[in-house]
Amino acid sequence: MQFRTLARIDLNALTHNISVIAKLAPQSLLMAVVKANAYGHGLASITPALATADAAGVATLEEATTLRANGWQGRLVLLQGFANVAELDAAIELETEVVVHQHSQLELLATRRDSFKQRLWIKLETGMNRLGFPADQLNAILQQLQQYPLGLMTHFASADEPDNSSVLAQISRFEATVAGIDLPKTLANSAAILNYPQAHGDMVRCGLMLFGVSPLAQGCGANLGLRPVMRFSSRLLAVKACQAGDLVGYNGTYSCSENMPIGVVAIGYGDGYPYLASSHTGEKSAMLMLKGVKCPIVGRVSMDMLSIDLRPLQALGVQAESGDEVILWGPELPVENLACSIGSIPYELLCGLTGRVNYQYHEDGTS
Ligand SMILES: Cc1ncc(COP(=O)(O)O)c(C=O)c1O
Image (cartoon, rainbow, N blue to C red; front, side, top):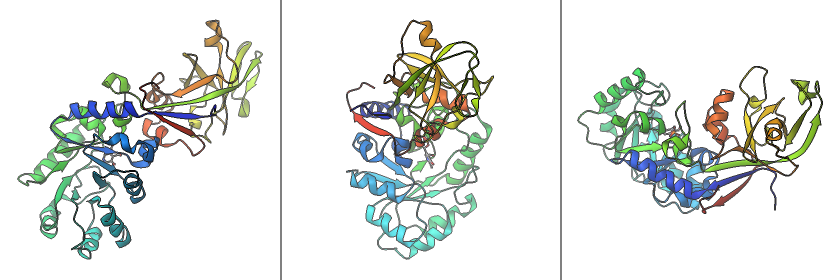
């Protein structure tokens, strides 16, 4: 069957990326962060490919349930913790380790003193001002939680920027707070694995790089030895011979400067392709790829369709036909480039695929 839109997921690439990341942080355990449906890759189906990770990390109990239901028996960390006693009971049932970041959680834990057995990760506020206990409360919390296996954690705001003074300050604050405390520590996300090796700690928490995508502002996963896991594609619906002066798409925001072929592609924001990739005069256009040739988007992205300028293909004497495969992103067209050209981030693009997209999983190493 020929799908309208297809996300092909290369499970071998995921396994490869785990081994690359493990070599980048050889002294640390590797937590595979697979929240948000494994960054849009399909959590249930990728679960077996996580086998070489030392732990899995998720944001929600639903995600934890999916991992367990699909055979993940290893360490599992609930990164957002629990908000009420029902959630704590579910965490106990699923045998998840849990991040604690506020006092209400400690009070809830006290009601389940005998049944919670997994590690509690005490999250410390070191400068991001999102979740975490202030440093000066750590000793009292350690006292309160002494019956549990514990770990210490923080999260960086700007690890994608090398030598960033705020990250260096976060590292110093964390080190000063935990000095002399002999507990496992976890600080680093993907970007910190690359930029701050001094913060690898006992376990790194890696999300985006698992999927072969770079967390840095410049470059793409392939530059880091990673292999993109997702190849997102659609089909050409129609080829139109437009005349000079013809306006393309909603509100006629693109005017053909000459007689030119325009391709209509079966993808739009209803599938998760970003509206912000609509062409804006004078700005860098977002590109799609047809028969190995990059073609810019023209006019507005609509719900189910968008248009591309087929002149780059025409210049090579290559004919485009309806039904041709069009690559939206993947190994040959990094999602990082699209994110950069529209002022987004690859995280958002990957997580944004909607239920209308078909998924195929394969282990053959081809994309
Ligand atoms: C607490 C925490 N740790 C680790 C990660 C993984 O981050 P990344 O995908 O940049 O590796 C996230 C993701 O946002 C997170 O919230």
